[in-house]
Amino acid sequence: MKKKKNNNEMVGRVFGLTGNVLDTILQILLIVVIVLVIIKGAGVAYDYGYRVFTEEPMAKTIGKEIEVTIPVDFSAMDLGKLFESKGLTRDPKLLALQYYCSEYRENVKGGTYTLSTTMTAEEMFEAIAEVNIEKAQAAKEAEEKLKAEEEAAAKAEAEAKEKAESDDGDMSGEGDTGIQQIDMGDDSGLTEDSIR
Image (cartoon, rainbow, N blue to C red; front, top):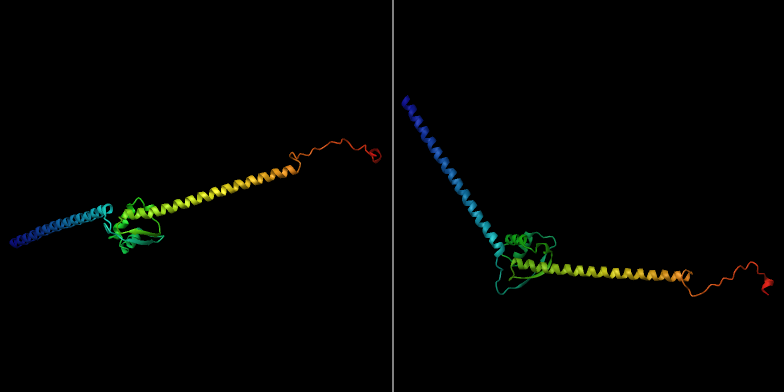
């Protein structure tokens, strides 16, 4: 019986040892898979990060001008899909990232613009922003001109009112009318007979 017990113990040890070896191998494989996923993810992230700032235009030399209408309420991904459909970018996700990194992002607004396939994403955003900046400056200049005209009209109205008030004051005897008043004295002692 002792011999049978030793055989069972040995089989148990072998299976235990095999189980430990398999656990270790599985842990190593899991670590290798995780490392490979991280390396692949880092490669994709580096590629996108590099392309955000160095992406070439769709056409390097001879391009075509394309009219694009950007909706008023757009997202960066909507803009990427729109530009891809018009042939202005290869990757809508990349264009969305470029939009978020662009210094012109705040001035990119909805409207109709003419862009070229020889433009990089940054050049397209700059062209859109320049149009919007020019519109904003024109609106500001028009507003300033209107304000100046309103101020001039208000000043002219105030001057006219002031002149009218001074003219009214002259007529009521408050000002110098050029007519002298003569004091006749007390006329209580005058009678009809004394005047004749």
